[in-house]
Image 1: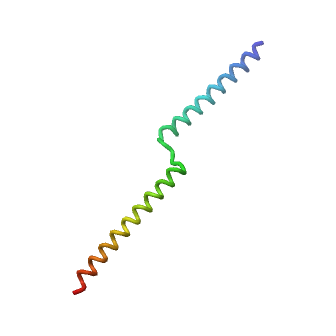
Image 2: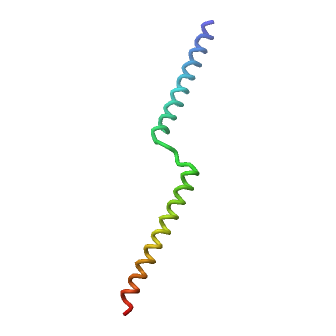
Image 3: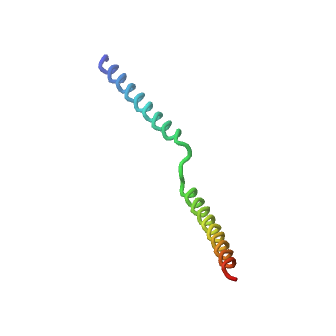
Length: 72
């Protein structure tokens, strides 16, 4: 019976080590903050496209203003 008790104790120790490692692993990822998802990527791509279009419009406006300034 003593052999079974040692086996049960070893199994409990292994289970506790496994649970501890799992909790530490999850805490590591939780400390990193929110995850970057596909929806985040689509939203960011849309925002960048809009920003690029706005920048292009501003550049065109500046180009037209310079062209008007140079033309007599």
